[in-house]
Length: 276
Image 1 (cartoon, rainbow, N blue to C red):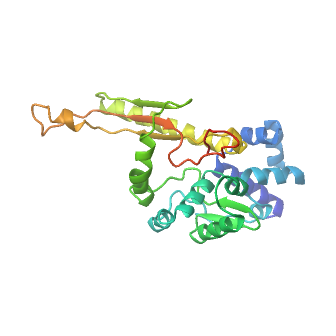
Image 2: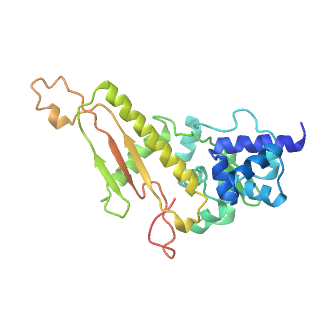
Image 3: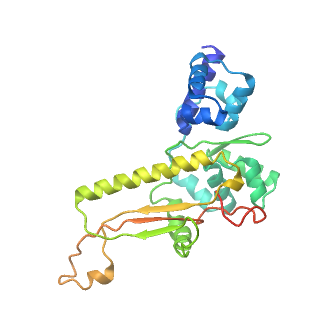
């Protein structure tokens, strides 16, 4: 297969992995969607345009000329990988930022870490198989678009013990903040329907975050959302039942979003709002 065909094939694969449609790519390139489709079908790109596409995807031309091996993109980390992150706050921070599309300069501008320190951290993440680093400053996540932390894994436990309490301890009275606690009795069919709605909402949040990751750091605020649903009844209510051994189910969805939780703050000289 010619280099040009390999490049186009791998370029399309990268776009799919990142969830970037032709329309989104066209907008980023400030071109029409038909033009982008034509270029991809014919494999005709100017060097300047190809360089811009590589910048959008955070890859090098060399990356596109080499076929990625099967299983390159991770949908979740191993228990050992997550444990390594939890045991090192700086490692966890940088992994979190890279997964959420921060670039090298944004990290060193925002956090107390030098270029050499960040490179050292990125090399450790590369040895863990979480990211890839190419000198002098190019880094790429190895996580897939549908990546998620392990259920009941070290990161999940860390979230419950350290992150969630701090998150829910906020007042939720800032601009854009919202808090809803809902309770009711739902049928099994309604529970399934509501859960599907949560999945759609979570997907929309991820798509917006991925889309806005290309905006300047000053134009983004750190936002977190916790979406939860289970059949449950408050223990104080259960004690008041005629038969306290039988707890009636009550679907209580948590729908909540705010800044910050694990989201870092933007430098104060730019704004007082937070970003991620």
